[in-house]
Image (cartoon, rainbow, N blue to C red; front, top):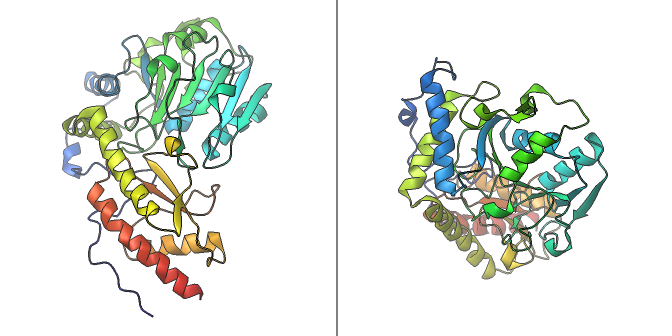
Length: 381
């Protein structure tokens, strides 16, 4: 039996978890002021890079004595710089509950070959931070982009910790309140919550992290793009706009435009409210259906950006194939693009709900999700 399609389509069907939806007001002509064909070390280039750093500080509420740098290779580059430059001075504690956190474990245990304590949790759950020893250097993700769970707050991180906290916050920055006093190293990428262009990362260092950099030399050689000190002192230029390698000034301009838009919707709190409204639309939808559920086990840890879902209907014969078929059907209709679960995650869907997504588009997409589910149930019968 043919199932009737919903009458309304999302104006923007882009729900990818990275690169994420551009700001709603995005147009290419907004990038006309980009410093193209100019050296990033010319006055105009340095001014734009410095503006990107200081506007990031203002919007996120980063303390004045924290350093903010624009670095190569997206969030991955920022995290690798931090781990290779800072770890090894004391025991490391690796905390992981999804694929990216697991990747950092691999780097530290198999590449750096450190004797690290590893704590893991299954997809949909997080490690109990009360079991973590913060006298060690602790590496963790704030929001599990591939598992849909987040750290609810920083209460378990002691103020008098002896170790450093190294936090991958790439799908949390600009969508969640980050407790800067509890974070010594924080990384994210432009292409997540603000929908910026890819390949650039942001690295934020507390004074404690800077002290470590200036007092500790790793036992292993550091590639040039990882080096943040010279002669035992921090290379200050990295954190004022003199990047280690050549950045894309087009991407920088795009980020500046996104930051300007973020201010227009109420800054950080406005962005958080938009993400919460988007996620709540999905959560409410799931709570009134018995065939789909949030992957996050505890409501307190549910992500408001990368909302991961699982199908729970007993009639589904092959969970992975079914989820892929639903995602493909929605893509073919042009109503939801790139919402399949991450390749290493449990079978299901992943809907990006960050602040650049309009709640009206989420609400218009969800009836299509129900239509696609029913169509696939019929197709396998």
